[in-house]
Length: 59
Image (cartoon, rainbow, N blue to C red; front, side, top):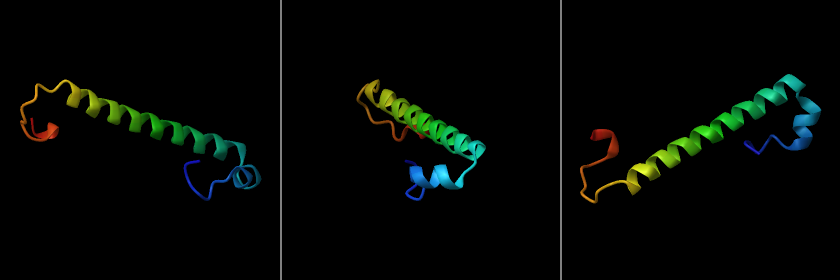
């Protein structure tokens, strides 16, 4: 559940099929973006040679 107000009962009772599909599509895309950012940062941290050159975005 992405939002506390979006219970299954609310979604089924108050939203049209198009709204439900858009809600879940946006949610899945948000989760995918979060995972890509997380794994990208983790990969950069794991491949670091140990010296501190400052934040990744400054290099």
